[in-house]
Amino acid sequence: MRILIFHGYLLGGTGSNVYNAKLAEALVGLGHEVHVVSQDRHMERFEFVDAIGTWEDGELRLQERRSPARCVAYRPDIGTLLPTYVADRYEGFEAKPFGECTDEEVDHYVARNVTAVAAVAAGAHPDVALANHLVMGPVILARGLADTGVPYAVKVHGSALEYTVKPHRERFMPAAREGLAGASAILVGSRHTAESLWEAMEDPDLPARTRLGPPGVDVNQFVPREPAAAAAGLGQLTERLLAGTVAPVGGPADAFARDKIAAGMALSRLDPEDDVLVSFVGKLIVSKGVDVLLMAWPLVLDRVPRARLVVVGFGAYREGFERLLAALIAGDLDQVAEIAQQGRALEGGPAAPLHMVLDFLEGLQGEERERYLAAAARLGEQVVLTGRLEHAELADLLPACEAQVVPSTFPEAFGMVTVEGAACAAFPISADHSGLAEVTRALAEAVPPEVAGWLSFGLQGEVVRALAERLVAWLTAPEELRARTREALVEVCRARYSWEGVAGSVIAAAQGRLDELAPPPEHELAPGAGG
Image 1 (cartoon, rainbow, N blue to C red):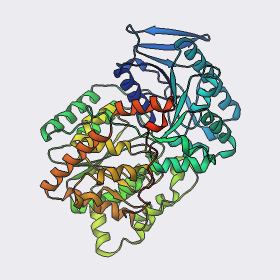
Image 2 (image 1 turned 30 degrees about the vertical axis):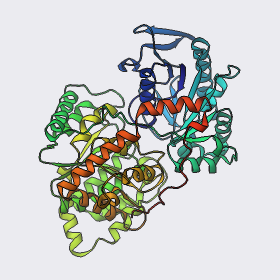
Image 3 (image 1 turned 60 degrees about the horizontal axis):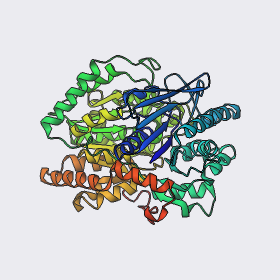
Image 4 (image 1 turned 60 degrees about the vertical axis):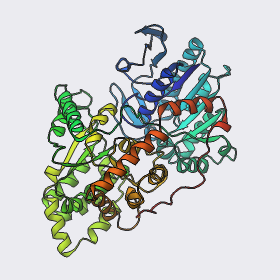
C-alpha cells in the first residue's frame, strides 16, 4: 500500500515529530511504501528514508539513496517563515506562533504546502493519507488531494487545538472545519482530547468519526537495563555528546539551541551508581509544570539526600527556570515569590502568576521552612539541566533513572513520555488529568496496588507537597516492591503500546474502517483525583 503522511515540522525531537518518524518507520517495516512531507532539513539521518524530495525553481527533484525507495521524504519550499503552535526555534526558519502570523503569511504557508502535496500525490499515487494536527495539516491535505479520491485520516495531537484553534477561534476554526470535513476518521490520543475537540468544533457528527489513536513506544529501543548496563549506556551517551560540536541554531546560550557539548558536560555530572536519578523530559514552558517539580525538589532532598533531578528540555521558560533555581539556592523566598508572580511573563506571554508555587510558599512555615531552605541550598549540585537531547538519546538516559515526572499543568493529548519512562522501568509520576490520566489508569491496573496511588498527583490543594510525597514514597519503598513494580510496568508497555499497532490503526482510519478501531473510552479519571 502507498501511504502519504503530511507533517509540517521535523521528524525528530519530541511529540508529534517523533510520532511521524516512528509511524513512517513502522509502516516501511510492515512492507508499505511511504511518502512523508515535512520540513526536516536532515532527512538523511533516518535509515528508513530511501530518497529525498526537494523543490528547485518550482520543480520537484528526487535524490535517491537506495532502490527501491520504500520511503521518500519531501521538504516543500515554504520560504523562511514556519508557523508554529508555541514559541520554538527551527534551523533556517523564522518560527512564529500561528496567532502572531498575518493572514497573508498563513495563506502563503498553506498554499506552498498544498502545491507540494498535489505534486507528491500526482507522482506517488497514494492509496491513503494522514494529516497531522488540527491546523493546518488537514486543510492542506483536503486541498492538495482534491479530486484524487484519496481518503485521509487526521491525527489530532492536541497542541494545535489548545494553543491555536481554541484561543483564536474566528481566525482558525474555518480551516479546521474544512480539513476535518473530508476526513474518513479523526484519531485522538485520549478521551480528554476527544471531548475538547468535540466541544470546540461544535459538530454533532464528529464523535461518530472519532477513534482512539495514541502514539506508541519503540519497545525494542526503550528497554530496562541492569544497573551496570544502564551506567555504561549513560556513559557512552555522555562520551558521544562530548565528542560532538555545538549546534549553530541560535547560539550556545539560546533557550532552544542544541548544544551537544553542554549536554555532555551536564550528563558527566551524573553518577548512576551513587545518585538516585529522577528525570523530567519536555519543553521548558510553564505549561509543562517544571516550576512545580523544582519547588518540590528540596522536599525530596530532605528525605532522599542522594536524589538528583535531571531536567531534559528547552524552551522559552529556560531563563525563568534558571532564575527560580538561583533564588532557591540563595534561600531568597521573597525572590522566589516575585518570580512566581511574574509567571508566564518570563516566557514572553501575558503575566499569569504560578499559583501552585505561591500557595506552597504561603504554607511553608517554622521548622519545615528551615529544613526546606537547607535542602534548597544543595540544588546547584542536585539539579542538572541538560538542554535539548534527541529522542533516541533518551533510551540511554531513562534506564538509569529511578523515576520520571510528567507534571504538566495544561492538558496533554497522551502521556508518551510517561510510557517511554515506564518501558525503561523508570517509575512514571504524572499529573492526574487529560491524556496523562488515561495512561496512568492503564499502568495502575498492572502494578501492585500499594504503589498505584503514587503514579499520579492532582492539581488542586497542596500540589507541590503531593508531588514530593509520591516521589519520596517511591524512592524509599522496599526493593522487593520496586522490583515487582518495574517488571509490571515494562510488561504492560510491551503489551499495550507498539508502533506496528499504531501503523495498522492509521491505515484503518484512513480507509474508514471505523468498526475496527476503539472509540475514546467513556470515562477518565477526574482531574485532581490523585491529589
